[in-house]
Image 1 (spheres, rainbow, N blue to C red):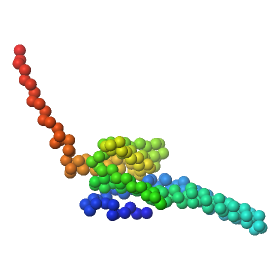
Image 2 (image 1 turned 60 degrees about the vertical axis):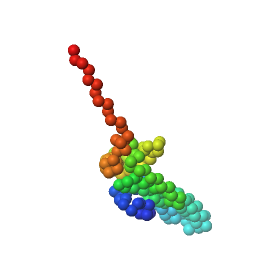
Image 3 (image 1 turned 45 degrees about the vertical axis):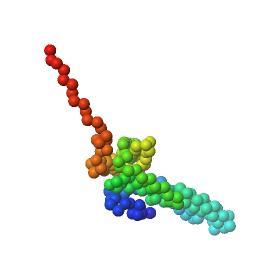
Length: 184
């Protein structure tokens, strides 16, 4: 499922578009292979009698159920999850039938934390937690190349602040002049 370009503003540019790490697809693919192998094994091993056909049908129905719920559906969820970084915001979209999209403007991000388990470090992925103003946060799970994504996010935030200018600078009062005392 492609990410729709119509959700972007006219001047907004996509800097990075990611799906969760490919490791999320390993288990569903293994489930599909095991389900197929189970059906083939039962079909070969059971005799072509009525009882054998009932056995093949039962194993086939169970394998089909497992293949759809534990194989195909997680693959669709994986492909339907998008992490999109633009020069203005972070867009998070997930869902297959019902879709949820979340926007985090770069100027409202005040913290981002990257974490990796040992397996994540070996695979080059990790979790990125992005906190924004107003107690809103987003957790991006299984982000590929998470260290580079975090660095890119930092650069995008700094570039956004430079372009927009810091609003805090206008609100600050000038520092009082130092009081000069007499020397003794």
